[in-house]
Amino acid sequence: MIANYAGRLHRSQLVQWDEPISPDEQASILAELAKSAGVDVYWMGRSYLGENLWAADVTLPTPSQLRSAAKETTLKATIVYSGRQHANEVSSTSHILKLGEQLVNDAQTRAMLKQVNVVCIPSPTRMAPNFRCSLPNHSQQHAASRLSRRARRGMFPAARRI
Image (cartoon, rainbow, N blue to C red; front, top):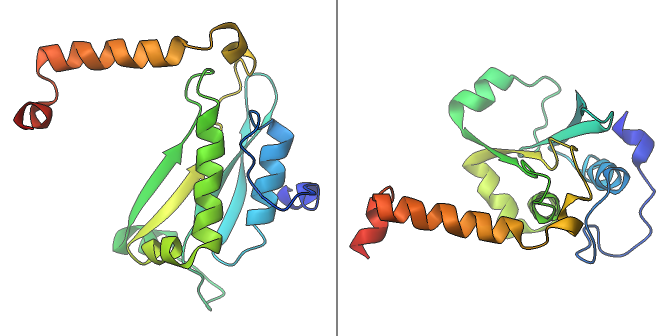
């Protein structure tokens, strides 16, 4: 099903930084990544608003036809990058897709897959894609206030030692 989105991007750079990535653009980027060995893109379901939700497993390529997910997750840690938990976090989609692109195309970044498996979930929710336009500084203010409250309560003991 992700293959239906392949070939729609007509630009040199796979992940763009100029504007928030739309659901169709995200699927097109994942479809391009899925052409690479070791990348398995799969459909997770639909959002509340009916958008397709995709995820990508990024591992080292293997010559084997059969793979054991249990073995892969037992022998190496799996890191899950899940973006846009809140509607105002639109840049997380771009960053997670860029990580996927680097894991595929950059040899130094790809070498990290010898130690870990990576799961990229660029946008698990599509509750309010235009929310950022109405409150552009909300996420920074919210994060800063939460961080300062936690620091006052001593929830970051390593930060006190610095």
